[in-house]
Image 1 (cartoon, rainbow, N blue to C red):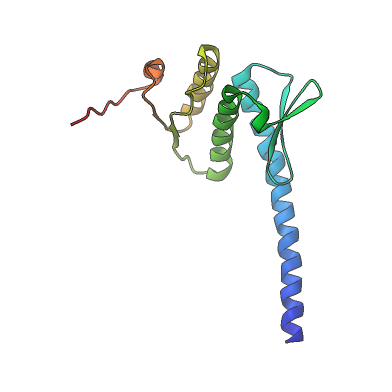
Image 2 (image 1 turned 120 degrees about the horizontal axis):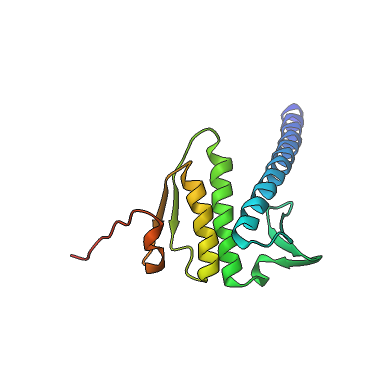
Length: 150
């Protein structure tokens, strides 16, 4: 029983180390890619997204940190779109997986939509994007498929 307990304790320590290494490696990569995409959408090079140790997000601008909940809804939407794109990139590895977005731009103004559209068009060169929306402002973004009620 003592040997089993020691083995379980050793395995627990090894697993904790592996989780910490995995988190640190992917956290840095996630943060770098997220910042690249977020700057492309916002057009604000002074803004920086920070991914914390537990993968919580915060935004730094001119030395002032804001949590995600302190951002405007539009900024949160931008950050969410960037996060989806970056996670799709990281998770898919060598596979090119489609990205499904369900009405993610409800709170976006015309300027934000233009920037998001540019980013998604660039991203669509590499993978299929399915955008589910009733927003007529997005009609020109791709090939619309309309489903009429019966």
